[in-house]
Amino acid sequence: MGRQAAALIPGNLEEHDFEDDVVYRGVHYSGLELSGRAVESLELERCRFSDTKLSGLRVVKSSFTETLFENSDLANVSARDTSLLRVLLTGSRMTGSSWAECSLRDTTIEDCRADLAAFRFSRFRRTVFRNCNLQGADFQNADLTGTQFEGCNLREARFAEATMAKTGFTDCDLLGVNGVTSFAGAVIHSGDLQSLAYSLAGALGITIKD
Image 1 (cartoon, rainbow, N blue to C red):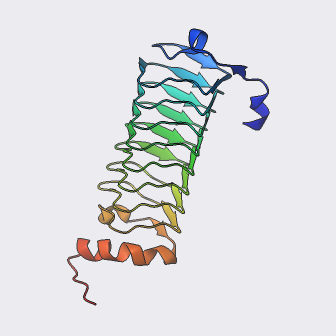
Image 2: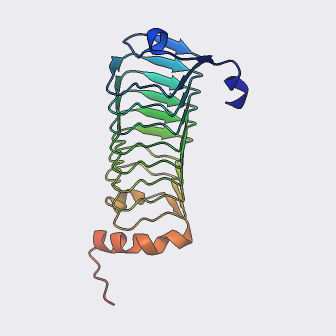
Image 3: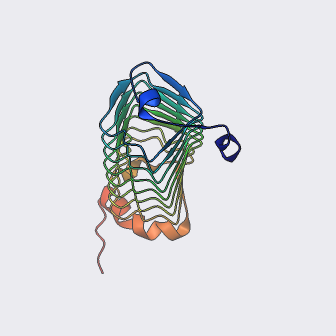
């Protein structure tokens, strides 16, 4: 993304506002207000969002390719049937956002607050969550094959009916996770087992006594 930055053109709302069926390439959105937009078939490629407000944005059947979101507000974003390909989200707020039936490939989400975010029925490939607050996040029926969670707070996150073959957990807090029976095939760092133990015991009907 660093090589692309020099080629980006400054974005403005007169020429680069979010609308249905538009395509923007190589635009740098910096400090702009895009909250509350509702669009369908939006296509963004090689774009960058810095300190941009996108809270409450609603997108359907849209795509974000080779795009960077940094220090931006994506709280309560609602995305459906939307793809993220080679996307980086860093230092951003994603609280309460919903990514239903979406596709995330070669994507990294790091240092983000994504508590109560929902990724139901979404498909992940070569995706990494790193140092994120994902407390209460919902991955119900998501295909998390090969996804890596590194240093994340996953307390009370929900994984019911998720596919988790080779899903990795390293230095994560898994206390109170729901849907632990879906963890078949997951790879869990030994240090994370203690926080997962109570959920495993509960799912198996085991009572733990001090």
